[in-house]
Image (cartoon, rainbow, N blue to C red; front, top):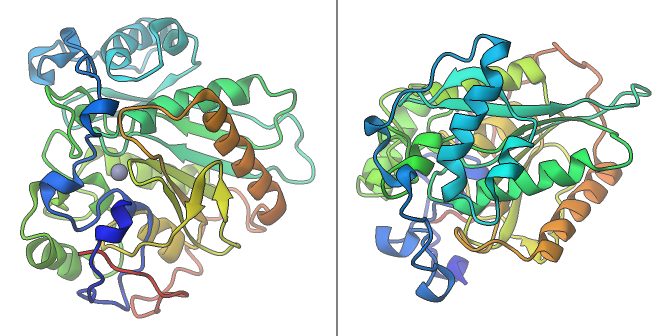
Length: 356
Ligand SMILES: [Zn+2]
């Protein structure tokens, strides 16, 4: 159990750093132990395969602008041809039929970020808005692949109760790197790059003092220095989600922050609050913006959960959503949390174990 190996340490600034999503996949283990690479038995040598996508992104042709709808299909075909060889259990046909469309945003290395929206069929009384992010860390291959499978499950649902926005690959640079990497094309850990209060003081200090300058956890020079984190930050304000779900691996737990009862269990994943980090999405969204943030840490970064477990996690999450969440009354465009963003000094609502 990876969590057992985590040290419980004092945060650099405990009152400011309340977090979640980021942590789980980035405990303070030595780099080699923290790497999400699964044991040999679960990481076949063929994964990721030695396909054209294993070439450095820089050596591949840049994706064209996705501004013209007529080009979307060609853009998706090109994108799928690159990412699919990295995604366990996802084939090209699945990707091409995914309904993904260009967001207009690109990674540091100019790879487009695709997403899919599914609108609620029933507008009354007020459908929840759910933003689901996979692949923030490019070496957590299953965290992207499982989003493809959940998109497919949701698209086949008899009724659409919520507004969904799926983003299966937030960090394509990391996914497509010669050896898939946690960081983006500029070497930044996107899950340390969100503008949590006190970032300028805390994030560099955390990186220097707690991680000993671990390159896998470099927070960047400034908050939102990276195009991927800038886009997601803007998208949170545009889409005004009632829930953010961030998928990671490989620690096999759930984490949660924000104003709602925490889930206890999705599939075989059980709640285990782990800690908080400056600059993480969980800290930024769940604590600072008052948006519930669920972090799903799959049990393996390269080997998918069984189809049954994949479905069970999805079904359990939807059950928890239905029982515990309501659309925020200020609604779309109300700049979730802008009127109620917590001050820098607001303490966490619950004790967190702090790895590192
Ligand atoms: Zn992660």
